[in-house]
Image (cartoon, rainbow, N blue to C red; front, side, top):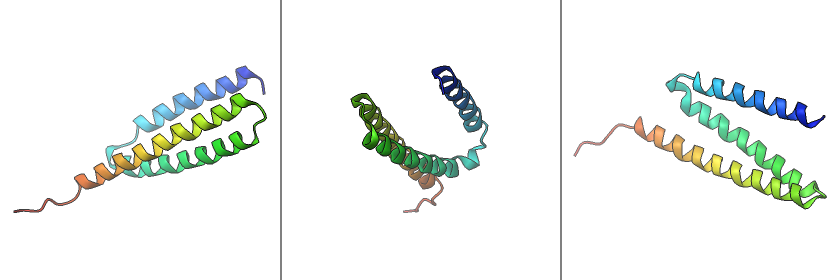
Amino acid sequence: MDFISILSIFVLSCFVGYYVVWSVTPALHTPLMAVTNAISSVIIVGGLIAAAAAGVPGAKWLGLAAVALASVNIFGGFAVTQRMLSMYKKKERK
C-alpha cells in the first residue's frame, strides 16, 4: 500500500473513533473504558512485535513509542474507571 492509502485509512479511523466515543451515553462510559484498555493491550503486543522484528532502528523506536503511549492509556483508563466506580459506592455515615 502506498502512503496516501495508509494516511487515508488513518484519518478516516480517527473521525470514526471520535464520533463513536462522543455518541456514547454516560451510562456506558465505564464499559467503554474497559474495552479501550483491551484495545490498548493489543497495541502493546503489536508494538512489541514490530520492535522485535524491525531491521531499521527507526522502527524499533516507533515500536517503543507505541508501547509507551499505549501503557499510559491503559493505566490512565484504569485510574478513570476506578474513580468512576468509586462515585457509585454508598458513602458511610459517621
